[in-house]
Image: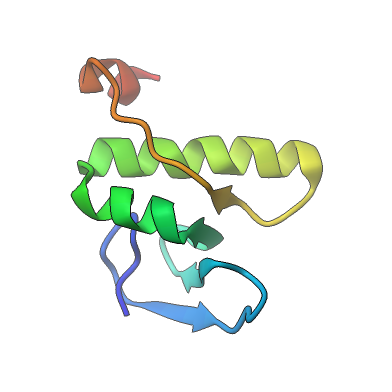
Length: 84
């Protein structure tokens, strides 16, 4: 299986109660992505995918939980994300 953010090979973590996938990637580390987010990530650019994971990590740090990508929003200008 490939990482939905960086496309590298990942280990899928068994999480039967989560409606999506939980993965462990050597590059992106461990995170979860909902089914809806997985569909959006597949269509998104690398900059948008990395931004979605960054946002999930920031929220997870505050809540002290595993990062979860729930949704992916296409920005009006991807260059702004790259600079953020």
